[in-house]
Image (cartoon, rainbow, N blue to C red):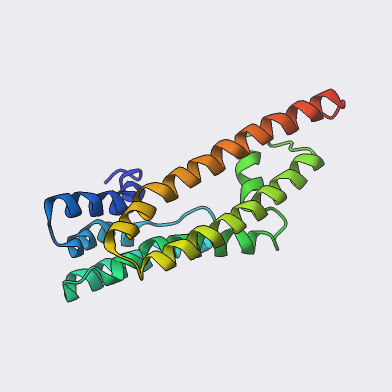
Length: 181
């Protein structure tokens, strides 16, 4: 199985809930989408390697119990694991964002390093808020859960990515005007 398929299956779960909702299929069938995540070898940072097996356990629970309850916690799990990975990286010599940035620019200047640290903190805050809302949706009607976790959370993440990209462009432009390398 190509490596890009496994993460796509995890992302497809909230969308699959929409299909189940429209077709009136049992939601617990979404457990099948999480099973292949057990074979995900690693992620960005060592902690994210645990995401796949933990997600697969939620899928197994859904299938064995024929209940979607465990699947409702998948977005909470994803946010918690990303929060943990990003937060732990704040105490390392390079944050996750810095490691990603250095793939494009190995000679990242000191102000770039400071910027990536702030971006890492911003993502931590995002995962706290997004994960908290995802947790709250587990107690709500399935329509609310699906709307938030299958649409609104993705839009919020897109806004975060897009906003960070715009800010980064401005920061790089300012650094270039100030004569920074």
